[in-house]
Image 1: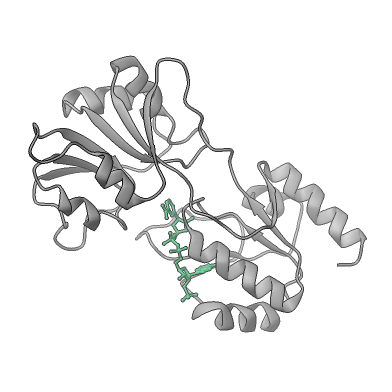
Image 2: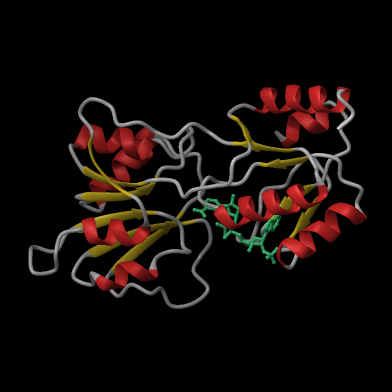
Length: 237
Ligand SMILES: NC(=O)c1ccc[n+]([C@@H]2O[C@H](COP(=O)([O-])OP(=O)(O)OC[C@H]3O[C@@H](n4cnc5c(N)ncnc54)[C@H](OP(=O)(O)O)[C@@H]3O)[C@@H](O)[C@H]2O)c1
């Protein structure tokens, strides 16, 4: 999206939440960090005379989406979500769906049963609830080296940034003797390799559904967003 906007000469600003140490450089002027809630975002949008907002966050970054929606409602600014379609189970998949992180923890075997080797492919922000099932061995994949103790006592981690490949994820799951994968339903291709590898290896997947987000126009390709931009600019909004 950023590349397309830059190539077309759009006057755009890219905003990162600042969750990773070395965010990927973008071909647009970039700012990093929160705004101080909806009020802060409203001030920022006004101060910078922003006319359109594109919410290109991860489908699980629900707070950012809610804030963008509330600020745009207040200012009557056009808002579009760029969101990849959710993954669907295919033949051969062994998915259990969970509606939240807590439900995913519940879906793991009880600690009275045999401990399992679990790949927690959910980032770093929501690990704590899994401490409720301390018998399992967890494998984490993180973008940065952890900057403190991890909340899970029996765990290993790899530091790796996507996109991931089938060969790489297959080898990772084999090497760590993974039996269960816990995944957020992010959609897209960059993180889908683990699901294909799980299918090949006959592994169980606990798939966490996306959180509820406010009603807004959502598109799944940058080109559609570009059309939306042109259309709403022509309408003078
Ligand atoms: N959650 C995930 O599973 C996940 C996975 C992969 C990548 N990511 C990415 O990681 C980043 C952070 O996600 P998150 O889940 O931590 O987000 P989040 O919980 O939804 O929001 C974190 C904070 O970001 C600030 N914020 C809101 N809008 C922003 C904007 N346009 N630019 C910069 N900061 C903004 C807000 O702080 P203030 O109140 O101070 O404004 C908000 O409380 C996002 O870029 C997301 O796409 C998230």
